[in-house]
Image (cartoon, rainbow, N blue to C red):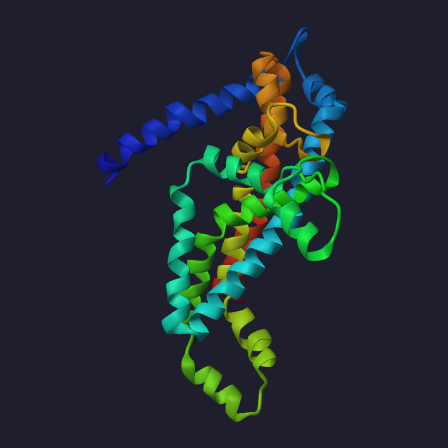
Length: 273
Protein backbone atom coordinates (compact mmCIF):
# COMPACT_ATOMS: atom_id res chain seq x y z
CA UNK A 1 0.00 0.00 0.00
CA UNK A 2 2.74 2.44 0.94
CA UNK A 3 4.51 1.79 -2.38
CA UNK A 4 1.36 2.99 -4.15
CA UNK A 5 0.97 6.05 -1.92
CA UNK A 6 4.64 7.05 -1.95
CA UNK A 7 4.66 8.91 -5.32
CA UNK A 8 1.64 10.97 -4.30
CA UNK A 9 2.98 11.66 -0.81
CA UNK A 10 6.34 12.67 -2.28
CA UNK A 11 4.62 15.13 -4.59
CA UNK A 12 2.61 16.61 -1.72
CA UNK A 13 5.77 16.90 0.37
CA UNK A 14 7.87 18.54 -2.34
CA UNK A 15 5.29 20.89 -3.84
CA UNK A 16 3.09 21.71 -0.81
CA UNK A 17 4.47 20.88 2.64
CA UNK A 18 8.07 21.97 2.15
CA UNK A 19 7.18 25.31 0.50
CA UNK A 20 4.60 25.93 3.22
CA UNK A 21 7.19 25.21 5.93
CA UNK A 22 9.68 27.50 4.18
CA UNK A 23 7.00 30.20 4.08
CA UNK A 24 6.43 29.93 7.83
CA UNK A 25 10.16 30.31 8.46
CA UNK A 26 10.33 33.25 6.05
CA UNK A 27 7.41 34.96 7.79
CA UNK A 28 9.34 34.89 11.07
CA UNK A 29 12.58 36.22 9.59
CA UNK A 30 13.36 39.87 10.25
CA UNK A 31 16.37 42.13 9.79
CA UNK A 32 17.49 41.44 13.36
CA UNK A 33 16.79 37.70 13.41
CA UNK A 34 13.50 35.93 14.02
CA UNK A 35 10.34 37.28 15.57
CA UNK A 36 6.74 38.38 15.02
CA UNK A 37 7.52 41.81 13.58
CA UNK A 38 6.22 40.82 10.13
CA UNK A 39 2.88 39.82 11.64
CA UNK A 40 2.65 43.05 13.60
CA UNK A 41 3.36 45.00 10.43
CA UNK A 42 0.77 42.93 8.55
CA UNK A 43 -2.06 43.64 10.98
CA UNK A 44 -1.24 47.35 10.82
CA UNK A 45 -1.52 47.21 7.03
CA UNK A 46 -4.79 48.87 5.99
CA UNK A 47 -4.94 46.99 2.67
CA UNK A 48 -4.70 43.62 4.46
CA UNK A 49 -7.43 44.54 6.93
CA UNK A 50 -9.68 45.69 4.06
CA UNK A 51 -9.04 42.47 2.10
CA UNK A 52 -9.71 40.28 5.14
CA UNK A 53 -13.00 42.04 5.96
CA UNK A 54 -14.17 41.89 2.32
CA UNK A 55 -13.32 38.19 2.02
CA UNK A 56 -15.12 37.37 5.27
CA UNK A 57 -18.14 39.47 4.25
CA UNK A 58 -18.30 37.69 0.91
CA UNK A 59 -18.19 34.30 2.63
CA UNK A 60 -20.97 35.28 5.05
CA UNK A 61 -23.14 36.17 2.06
CA UNK A 62 -22.29 33.45 -0.44
CA UNK A 63 -22.13 30.36 1.80
CA UNK A 64 -25.72 30.64 3.16
CA UNK A 65 -26.99 31.46 -0.34
CA UNK A 66 -25.12 28.50 -1.81
CA UNK A 67 -26.54 26.13 0.81
CA UNK A 68 -30.09 27.50 0.62
CA UNK A 69 -30.42 27.72 -3.16
CA UNK A 70 -28.77 24.39 -3.88
CA UNK A 71 -31.01 22.65 -1.34
CA UNK A 72 -34.11 24.33 -2.77
CA UNK A 73 -33.17 23.32 -6.33
CA UNK A 74 -32.43 19.75 -5.26
CA UNK A 75 -35.71 19.41 -3.35
CA UNK A 76 -37.62 20.83 -6.30
CA UNK A 77 -35.92 18.37 -8.64
CA UNK A 78 -36.75 15.50 -6.28
CA UNK A 79 -40.38 16.56 -5.95
CA UNK A 80 -40.79 16.84 -9.72
CA UNK A 81 -38.55 13.90 -10.51
CA UNK A 82 -39.33 13.45 -14.22
CA UNK A 83 -39.19 17.10 -15.23
CA UNK A 84 -37.03 18.39 -12.38
CA UNK A 85 -34.16 16.02 -13.01
CA UNK A 86 -33.83 17.40 -16.51
CA UNK A 87 -33.26 20.83 -14.97
CA UNK A 88 -30.12 19.56 -13.24
CA UNK A 89 -28.23 18.89 -16.46
CA UNK A 90 -27.85 22.48 -17.73
CA UNK A 91 -26.14 23.60 -14.49
CA UNK A 92 -23.22 21.28 -15.26
CA UNK A 93 -22.29 23.41 -18.27
CA UNK A 94 -20.88 25.98 -15.84
CA UNK A 95 -17.85 23.75 -15.31
CA UNK A 96 -17.06 23.84 -19.04
CA UNK A 97 -17.22 27.64 -19.46
CA UNK A 98 -13.79 29.35 -19.17
CA UNK A 99 -13.33 31.97 -16.47
CA UNK A 100 -12.65 34.77 -18.97
CA UNK A 101 -15.87 33.99 -20.84
CA UNK A 102 -17.94 34.11 -17.65
CA UNK A 103 -16.38 37.43 -16.61
CA UNK A 104 -16.96 38.91 -20.08
CA UNK A 105 -20.58 37.74 -20.03
CA UNK A 106 -21.07 39.36 -16.61
CA UNK A 107 -19.55 42.60 -17.91
CA UNK A 108 -22.15 42.62 -20.71
CA UNK A 109 -24.90 41.95 -18.16
CA UNK A 110 -23.95 44.53 -15.54
CA UNK A 111 -22.19 47.38 -17.36
CA UNK A 112 -23.83 50.83 -17.48
CA UNK A 113 -25.95 49.99 -20.52
CA UNK A 114 -25.93 46.24 -20.00
CA UNK A 115 -28.87 43.91 -20.14
CA UNK A 116 -29.63 44.11 -16.40
CA UNK A 117 -29.94 47.89 -16.52
CA UNK A 118 -32.08 47.67 -19.66
CA UNK A 119 -34.44 45.15 -18.02
CA UNK A 120 -34.74 47.17 -14.81
CA UNK A 121 -35.30 50.43 -16.70
CA UNK A 122 -37.97 48.92 -18.96
CA UNK A 123 -39.71 46.95 -16.23
CA UNK A 124 -39.60 49.41 -13.32
CA UNK A 125 -38.56 52.72 -14.87
CA UNK A 126 -35.49 52.98 -12.62
CA UNK A 127 -32.36 54.81 -13.79
CA UNK A 128 -29.28 52.89 -14.88
CA UNK A 129 -27.03 51.71 -12.06
CA UNK A 130 -23.26 51.25 -12.04
CA UNK A 131 -23.18 47.65 -10.83
CA UNK A 132 -19.40 47.34 -11.23
CA UNK A 133 -18.48 50.06 -8.75
CA UNK A 134 -19.44 50.83 -5.16
CA UNK A 135 -21.53 48.64 -2.87
CA UNK A 136 -23.67 47.39 -5.77
CA UNK A 137 -20.79 45.36 -7.15
CA UNK A 138 -21.56 42.65 -4.58
CA UNK A 139 -24.53 41.77 -6.80
CA UNK A 140 -22.43 40.73 -9.84
CA UNK A 141 -19.79 39.07 -7.64
CA UNK A 142 -22.31 37.01 -5.68
CA UNK A 143 -24.31 36.14 -8.78
CA UNK A 144 -21.21 34.98 -10.67
CA UNK A 145 -20.24 32.90 -7.62
CA UNK A 146 -23.63 31.18 -7.57
CA UNK A 147 -23.67 30.71 -11.34
CA UNK A 148 -20.31 28.94 -11.30
CA UNK A 149 -20.46 26.89 -8.11
CA UNK A 150 -24.13 25.99 -7.59
CA UNK A 151 -24.09 22.81 -9.67
CA UNK A 152 -22.12 20.39 -7.48
CA UNK A 153 -23.98 21.19 -4.21
CA UNK A 154 -27.30 20.64 -6.01
CA UNK A 155 -26.29 17.09 -6.85
CA UNK A 156 -25.05 16.55 -3.28
CA UNK A 157 -28.44 17.52 -1.87
CA UNK A 158 -30.30 15.64 -4.59
CA UNK A 159 -28.44 12.43 -3.74
CA UNK A 160 -28.96 13.01 -0.02
CA UNK A 161 -32.69 13.53 -0.45
CA UNK A 162 -32.95 10.42 -2.62
CA UNK A 163 -31.41 8.36 0.17
CA UNK A 164 -33.95 9.40 2.83
CA UNK A 165 -36.55 6.84 3.85
CA UNK A 166 -39.97 7.28 2.26
CA UNK A 167 -41.58 5.62 5.30
CA UNK A 168 -40.56 8.52 7.54
CA UNK A 169 -42.45 11.02 5.40
CA UNK A 170 -45.44 8.72 5.09
CA UNK A 171 -45.58 8.36 8.89
CA UNK A 172 -45.32 12.14 9.28
CA UNK A 173 -48.17 12.63 6.80
CA UNK A 174 -50.33 10.13 8.71
CA UNK A 175 -49.64 12.11 11.90
CA UNK A 176 -50.90 15.25 10.16
CA UNK A 177 -47.54 17.02 9.68
CA UNK A 178 -47.61 19.87 7.18
CA UNK A 179 -45.13 20.18 4.32
CA UNK A 180 -43.16 22.81 6.25
CA UNK A 181 -42.99 20.66 9.40
CA UNK A 182 -41.77 17.70 7.39
CA UNK A 183 -39.11 19.90 5.83
CA UNK A 184 -38.01 21.50 9.10
CA UNK A 185 -38.18 18.45 11.40
CA UNK A 186 -37.22 15.71 8.94
CA UNK A 187 -35.44 16.96 5.84
CA UNK A 188 -33.18 19.56 7.44
CA UNK A 189 -31.93 17.37 10.36
CA UNK A 190 -31.44 14.35 8.09
CA UNK A 191 -29.55 16.43 5.53
CA UNK A 192 -27.31 18.07 8.13
CA UNK A 193 -24.19 16.24 6.86
CA UNK A 194 -24.87 17.50 3.34
CA UNK A 195 -25.51 21.02 4.65
CA UNK A 196 -22.22 21.14 6.51
CA UNK A 197 -20.27 19.59 3.64
CA UNK A 198 -21.73 22.17 1.26
CA UNK A 199 -20.76 24.92 3.72
CA UNK A 200 -17.17 23.63 3.64
CA UNK A 201 -17.24 23.63 -0.17
CA UNK A 202 -18.73 27.12 -0.24
CA UNK A 203 -16.01 28.43 2.04
CA UNK A 204 -13.35 26.97 -0.25
CA UNK A 205 -15.11 28.31 -3.34
CA UNK A 206 -14.80 31.85 -1.95
CA UNK A 207 -11.06 31.65 -2.49
CA UNK A 208 -11.56 30.57 -6.12
CA UNK A 209 -13.81 33.45 -7.13
CA UNK A 210 -10.70 35.64 -7.27
CA UNK A 211 -10.11 34.67 -10.91
CA UNK A 212 -13.42 36.15 -12.01
CA UNK A 213 -12.92 39.22 -9.79
CA UNK A 214 -9.46 39.76 -11.28
CA UNK A 215 -10.77 39.56 -14.86
CA UNK A 216 -13.61 41.96 -14.01
CA UNK A 217 -11.70 44.54 -11.98
CA UNK A 218 -7.97 43.92 -12.41
CA UNK A 219 -5.24 43.83 -9.76
CA UNK A 220 -6.53 46.96 -7.99
CA UNK A 221 -10.34 46.72 -7.96
CA UNK A 222 -12.79 49.02 -6.16
CA UNK A 223 -12.23 48.78 -2.44
CA UNK A 224 -15.46 46.82 -1.92
CA UNK A 225 -14.11 44.03 -4.18
CA UNK A 226 -10.53 43.97 -2.85
CA UNK A 227 -10.09 40.38 -1.66
CA UNK A 228 -7.32 38.64 0.26
CA UNK A 229 -6.07 37.08 -2.98
CA UNK A 230 -5.64 40.56 -4.48
CA UNK A 231 -3.46 41.46 -1.52
CA UNK A 232 -1.36 38.28 -1.83
CA UNK A 233 -0.96 38.68 -5.58
CA UNK A 234 0.12 42.31 -5.25
CA UNK A 235 2.66 41.44 -2.56
CA UNK A 236 4.02 38.68 -4.79
CA UNK A 237 4.46 41.13 -7.67
CA UNK A 238 6.31 43.49 -5.31
CA UNK A 239 8.48 40.57 -4.12
CA UNK A 240 7.53 41.53 -0.53
CA UNK A 241 8.19 38.02 0.78
CA UNK A 242 8.02 38.96 4.45
CA UNK A 243 4.50 40.42 4.15
CA UNK A 244 3.41 37.78 1.64
CA UNK A 245 4.44 34.81 3.78
CA UNK A 246 3.00 36.34 6.97
CA UNK A 247 -0.34 36.93 5.22
CA UNK A 248 -0.31 33.39 3.79
CA UNK A 249 0.35 31.94 7.24
CA UNK A 250 -2.48 33.95 8.82
CA UNK A 251 -4.84 32.91 6.03
CA UNK A 252 -3.85 29.25 6.39
CA UNK A 253 -4.54 29.33 10.15
CA UNK A 254 -7.88 31.08 9.65
CA UNK A 255 -9.00 28.67 6.91
CA UNK A 256 -7.82 25.70 8.97
CA UNK A 257 -9.77 26.87 12.02
CA UNK A 258 -13.00 27.35 10.07
CA UNK A 259 -12.67 24.06 8.21
CA UNK A 260 -11.81 22.22 11.45
CA UNK A 261 -14.94 23.61 13.12
CA UNK A 262 -17.13 22.61 10.17
CA UNK A 263 -15.60 19.13 10.01
CA UNK A 264 -16.14 18.65 13.74
CA UNK A 265 -19.76 19.68 13.30
CA UNK A 266 -20.01 17.32 10.33
CA UNK A 267 -18.64 14.42 12.38
CA UNK A 268 -21.22 15.06 15.07
CA UNK A 269 -23.87 15.00 12.36
CA UNK A 270 -22.72 11.61 11.11
CA UNK A 271 -21.95 10.19 14.57
CA UNK A 272 -24.27 11.90 17.05
CA UNK A 273 -23.55 11.19 20.71
